[in-house]
Image (cartoon, rainbow, N blue to C red; front, side, top):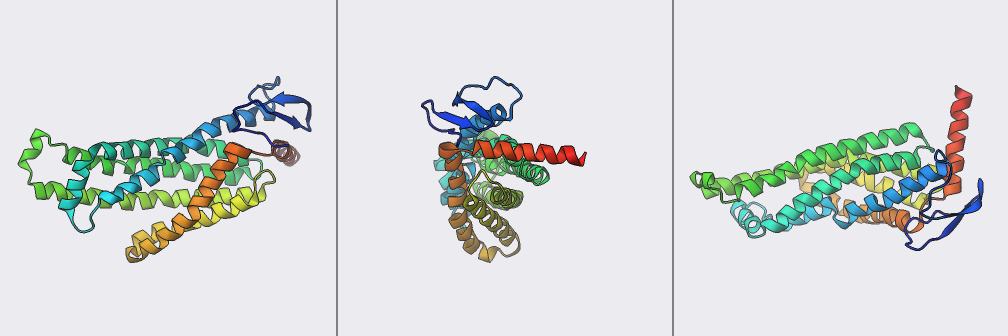
Length: 277
């Protein structure tokens, strides 16, 4: 009774509401049917959900932390200058990841809207806020590319000054990322709640997403309010976010959503809205 969204071969699923077998990947005849709508969303989510995990901007950009020598702007600038190509790739990956967050917000709204449309919308808005803040914040990682480009007009600036500005831009990026991950963490908490309340996704994934979201929020506020403890809370983020985000991605890719139960939840919400109206 599960819609397969990741297998390349054609599989067959049976919807209790629609007795005939339907090939995975083929469109239903009724253009307005919920089945066709969610199937299309799932096929799209398969591609989009995979993109941020293959070139995860957060992880890839954070990996550039190996270039940063704490308290040593000159060494930091030298490390970046020696690997500008990798730095550019990291910046591009970050922009791709934040861009993918916007359609993902819509997809999860469609998938989890039948549980609670208001909370699903709130989750989508927080994810959109994270994408906007994160995309703007990436500009701080573009600054070193300009400062270390070796352009002629930079000859008038002392190398120590360029190194200091490069170092400060990376510090500013770290704070900006922490701010962006606050709405992202709230999104994870809301998604986790919706998944737990749903009947067509594993509740375990919902619990993991809720814990990961709380860790994101705590770590971000710790970085801003008590940076001395940020390394400790970051460990909690890594330990909780990896199984939660990767687990949800793999489930959608390999297992999918229980389509009959999703359809029933959607119909229940429509019936409730009709009665309330």
